[in-house]
Length: 353
Image 1 (cartoon, one colour):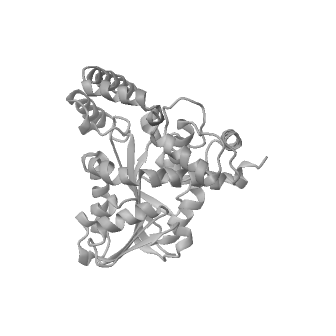
Image 2 (cartoon, helix red, strand yellow):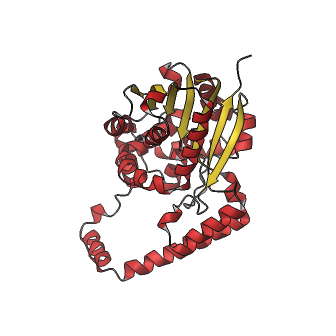
Image 3 (cartoon, rainbow, N blue to C red):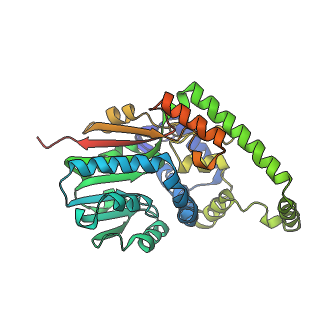
């Protein structure tokens, strides 16, 4: 058996996580390294989700607390950086955060902005949406350690780090592409403080139970529900076309897997460091991040300048919930200002000696 540090340095759960990973790989007949296994599942998932990111998630983000947190971090950067600046957006997805950058930095404020992602579908969507934002905008396909992009005044990752298996290697690269005395923004990451806060978790669980009950009652009185159920009974091959089914179909076709991954396995292989409520015990990562641990363990070359947290409904957009839960969100935010389910960090790299 391969020892843990030789496989994915920096990944949590040590030998227990390695045992889970190897058991899953063996069950589905994955003929590849653990690192390649994680990457294959993640790449396929995000390729299939690319359209959803553009159509649904980008419409919801401006209503979330993370949107305001990212804007606040960008405003602070603009106050401390002399323009024009260079910007690197790592894991740009379909370009959500670059659009927010444009709200703060005018075209003349930016000498160059580079967007990178490992997904061709995401890069293609970003190009279609954002090519006209800045005249000097570049799009790069691949991982930042392979692209040789140089150093930048501002480096941004948004909703990305919880997907990263090898935190040590990733943050080493982040440090290498951030110029001395310049800034790194880590936006919209899951916070372990929220999940350790008893009151926050209790309110969150109550909200989930209440919303499931409300939606179930709404479906019972909706005649379209019965039409859909009858259609699925008549066409059984269309019953299970969820994202999990699609991911497994693609993994069988492209990677030769001989069995299916469970939904929890897929979720944890994609969102490695996010809590998962799906049934099962497969776990290879952290249940959210503690930013003090990140700073002391992986980001020693940076000073932590500011922390923002938001979204006290466990990542569910409060604005999409009934008024009762919006008020609960606001009450928790006032009582526990640093215990939101998502956080954004502003870090400054140490000046050159």
